[in-house]
Length: 420
Ligand SMILES: C[S@@+](CC[C@H](N)C(=O)[O-])C[C@H]1O[C@@H](n2cnc3c(N)ncnc32)[C@H](O)[C@@H]1O
Ligand code: SF4
Ligand code: SF4
Image (cartoon, rainbow, N blue to C red; front, top):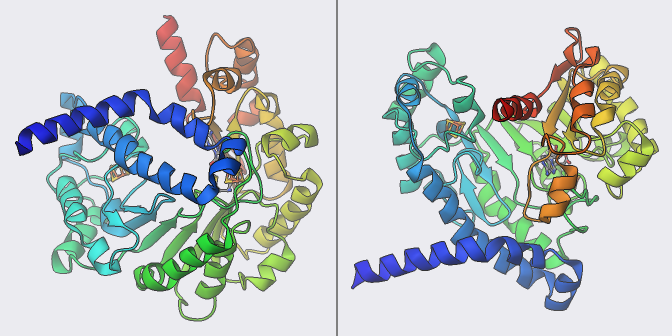
């Protein structure tokens, strides 16, 4: 009976997963629908759908992935420290030990006891899968470290140190946290969302309770914390409160890594949030070098204000008051012509790196919207021009800022192989 129920449930999950979620999710993010049903209910339902259906599909892909002999041999002789050192939070209330796209098995929910969460059975199973060399919870295609064969060797000093530490003290708390549990942001970039989202006061209070109950205990032994991959560290009231709390004296060793649109990161925020001496790395996502393009791709942003804040950050970097500064661009049909200029923008404001990443398909896009934006497709009307832009000498420069071309050339390579 249990077996029949399980099979039936698995089939139902599969059926609903294939037919419903993408369309449903697009409906959920439609502003009129949100207004009608109420944002809180939508959020709860969206999280439930993601945690129940989408997640199962991502896990099934991992379970059923074909592992060729060369990958199997590679993984048997290599190691990844992430599941032993890192904890990542998500807006659906789950916690992971790596990026949820690359390793889609959660270790538990954010409302659990912090130590039990970090040492949950799922967390232990994931760590064992790294130690036994199967990496069976990792998506071998999506994980850049596996795909680019850049994991450390199992016998390297780094790997041996992590393994020995784990054997001595398996319960040791994470060294690095990635906090992505609040989507609140001051912008609504079309690549990311269809409308502005700011948590209401009830949600904010709930998130602030999470700080005291879960996040601070989990941060007790951490050396670094990244804020954020979900919303904006300065556009979210919760993240601002958290940063203030972390910089209030209780976490002297902890260093911040900030990923932000940069609109609100000015001298005043720097002072008010007590950021001096606390920040290791700042990534500013910019996506354009011209004000008109910026207004579209970074909807709600003001280019003049951005430039003023970049000048402030450039000064901090030149004075060594932040250890690294990176500018990033999500490459798409609207902005690819500005790629060479983007490198010059990095140079102007003392960035260490400028990084390019191809626009990723998101549930919020219709198929037509993605086709129009995705310049990596050889059938895109501007594809040939895109290939010409990629030959620009600025993109191959050796001196600072370093150019990280990300997955952009990967797409071009794949297209060339497909055409051959
Ligand atoms: C979601 S944002 C959160 C941090 C912050 N608000 C920011 O924009 O930097 C994290 C990163 O995702 C990038 N991003 C947004 N939409 C994307 C898409 N469709 N494909 C690839 N990257 C995307 C942003 O440019 C940013 O660098
Ligand atoms: S998905 Fe990749 S980065 Fe994450 S734990 Fe596995 S090997 Fe490491
Ligand atoms: S600034 Fe970042 S989080 Fe905000 S909408 Fe844009 S990409 Fe998304």
